[in-house]
Length: 89
Image 1 (cartoon, rainbow, N blue to C red):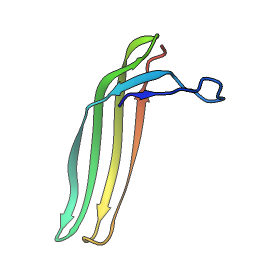
Image 2 (cartoon, rainbow, N blue to C red; image 1 turned 30 degrees about the horizontal axis):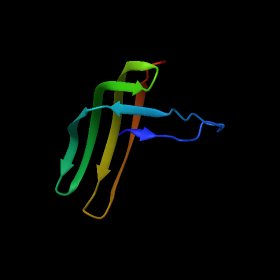
Image 3 (tube, rainbow, N blue to C red; image 1 turned 90 degrees about the horizontal axis):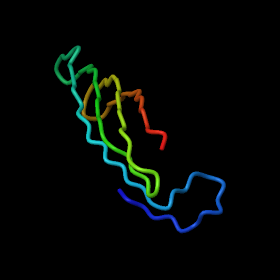
Image 4 (cartoon, rainbow, N blue to C red; image 1 turned 60 degrees about the vertical axis):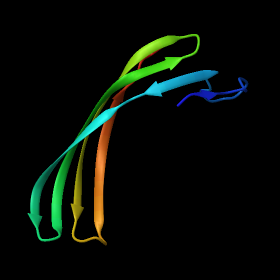
């Protein structure tokens, strides 16, 4: 999504315009299933680009791993850890 920032006198990172495109795929593997109870692990991978006005374009890589546990339609819990490699423009 492209954004345009009009203020440059701020104490945080505020590029005048940037664009990130990062398609990803998620693979889910069921470790245990019995009736409505399921325990799954998930792998996430993605590759894309980041472009900033006046600084060029660079590659972005994304890797992630997570687990999910659910006992019914009411209780569902999980966590995912992701690592992202961003370009230094």
